[in-house]
Length: 210
Length: 210
DNA sequence: GAAAACAGTGTACACTTGTACACTGAAATT
DNA sequence: AATTTCAGTGTACAAGTGTACACTGTTTTC
Image (tube, rainbow over the protein chains, first blue to last red):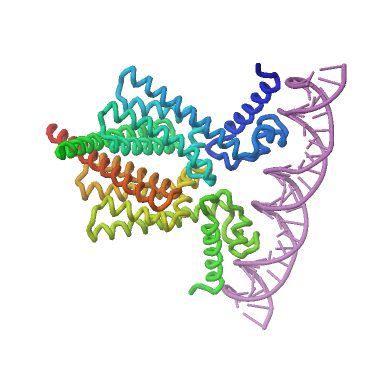
């Protein structure tokens, strides 16, 4: 049985997390948020913050975890859409661009903390991105029968390209965002083609040795 | 004739710029620098800062310009080395990795402000990166006889991949940095191969129409 | 040589920041 | 029913922030 007290505490903790997310924007990064601001937005006295997090860093890491979660939901959604037919590449890019539109601030958080001043933050983001990459790597290896090494190179390149496009998409209007999506699809196709060729060449080379 | 006063002023301005650059590090971003800190590091009274910049943003934009300049020097150096023989891709990546090692903080500045909270900063960085991309695009188009559109896709993808690798390189030791360089070379080769194929296909398609 | 311009200084002020500490009242435990 | 636990409060303080303003001494201009 979970007590009424623990329940209330969880709710308040959630309020702090949401307050921080609400305040994130193009003009406001997490590191520019103060403990007092977050507490105020959550409707709490500044010192109440400490009942839930030891400092802003701890809250920040929690946010990165949340962002990672959202990223995984995105992956699932893309996979589901792909199962229902359509080009893998196009469907993935479209799904990702929708994600950017709906979760701009969460994506911004990841982008910023990826090159931020806290090693712990950088590691946390890096972990989430790596997970994303590995999932794709697995898929490429099995669906396209790619050589393992080549599959990794492709997966890593694809994730990098898509994230970078997402970053660019944050700053532009809907029309330009469409162009960005088209460009990204083109680039992913180029990479897929190149990876396919390299993989074939490598497998042939391995056979000659037998 | 440039007066002794203007000369001194330029020197002090330089001191402010250098003071800011000195204070940048993995743990310290430009936005976390205060006007007073920079002035102190430069050996000036806080209020003297205003004789040279209206606020920290103006100093920051100056730094981004400096970084752009360094980036162009990097490009020139890479081109020169390529003329002296060796693989274009390998030479470029090696040169870039050396740049990261020597100018980590300048590169960090670009990375961070690229997704920072100031629209002006983002635009400034974006401009420098675009310049970089366009140079590469020109080169690809002429050296490899690529279709213009495909050349752009390749150039943009290549720059994205290399910058991202540079970002990763900042956080790792020399040995891992070498692995990173190898990975990047492999990815650029894949992209080059894919772009080549797409360009050929496109040109053939255009000929059938004649 | 007198007057003006101006880079750099020092003081002062209003704000914001994180957090230590003592408190309250309701929930949980005994 | 008495006691303990603990989420949330309010006050207080030292430290740091940007910047307005009046100043000084040297360089430049006239």
